[in-house]
Amino acid sequence: MSYVKALKCRECGQEYEKTAKYVCEFCFGPLEAAYDYDKIKKDVSREKIASRPLNIWRYREFLPVEGTRYNTLEEGYTPLIRAERLGEELGLSNLYVKNDCANPTHSFKDRVVAVASTRALELGFDTLACASTGNLANAVSAYGAKGGMKRFVFIPSNLEPSKVTASLIYEPNLIGVNGNYDDVNRLCSEIAGKYKWAFVNINMRPYYAEGSKTLGFEVAEQLGWKAPDQVVVPVASGSLLTKIWKGTEEFAKVGLIERKKMKVFGAQAAGCSPVTTAFKAKTDTFRPVKPNTIAKSLAIGNPADGFYALKTIAESNGGAEMVTDEEIVEGIKLLARTEGIFAETAGGVTIGCLKKLVESGALDPHAVTVAYVTGTGLKTQEAVTDHLKEVKVIQPNLAAFEATHMVPA
Ligand SMILES: *Cc1c(COP(=O)(O)O)cnc(C)c1O
Ligand SMILES: [Zn+2]
Image (tube, rainbow, N blue to C red):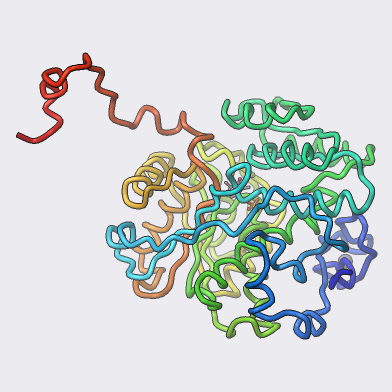
């Protein structure tokens, strides 16, 4: 049984059945899951949620699947770390890092793919597919394997070697496309029109996107059933940012938390910053760009939810920032040095932007702040290898060690 009433057009409100459909036939607006919040309110409580297993399905009433046969690898309920050292360095007295590297395939994409693949199996699909900037490829490859599905995974051909390996190990059909993500996505939209496959981020997008809400739910629960005051979220398609906001609003709507104005800040790489550039220019329409950044997981030049991300930022009274590739590397190193977390380039974007947002005065230094770190550094090692100390190689004796002068006399 599901609490989803229908898929609903975000623009004109037209309702549709809960099938693999994603655009409105009347106005071409995107479709979104619409819930019966009165019913949810009657059926959920903090105690009920708290009694359930520590994965995203503890919030099942807010997720768009019908049954309870989840296609799961125990994704979610990742650590929310009190980041005192990083906070001290940046001048934030109440900082937390949501460490979503701690997911089955080591990025937040496991949340969205768990939901999309579960729904795909419910709808009878035997093939799971996606257009990916890297992490989604890993998650679709793994969750498709877990669900016993065929998998077609499309990526830009210049992806990081570790992200390719972390897909191939699950034996999907992996197709490298000569072009950037936006080219891959265009091709996949065409393929999705012809083959009856569940493309998680195309025809399954209304279900896929809802999985990101769990990042808002968890943070609220982990803070003791309270929303943070301000959050910094990396932006690629813009879906994650809008859904963290939507999830937090839903929790307030059904009375699980008190309503408060949470400010949402978007983080992008300067080499691919359509949303941040539009925000800074004070316009609500972005201009598509050709990405050129080491943050490949965020390299979407024509973001599907860019418009809604800008709307969410404006509505929440938040903001947006961008960082250069050098600042991304510094951000990765800063987080590792202060908090012991090795993030990928997208995490470097978040931390780099966090720093700049403090410096510009956009963030309140004493408010409860959450920085979302969405993927692991083990998959983007080439971004930092040239920026690290060297290993000292010695003979296996004490004198050789002391000759390194690593220990102060
Ligand atoms: C995909 C991705 C994002 C952004 O997700 P969108 O919903 O497309 O904005 C952020 N971080 C990482 C590591 C990702 O892989
Ligand atoms: Zn419509």
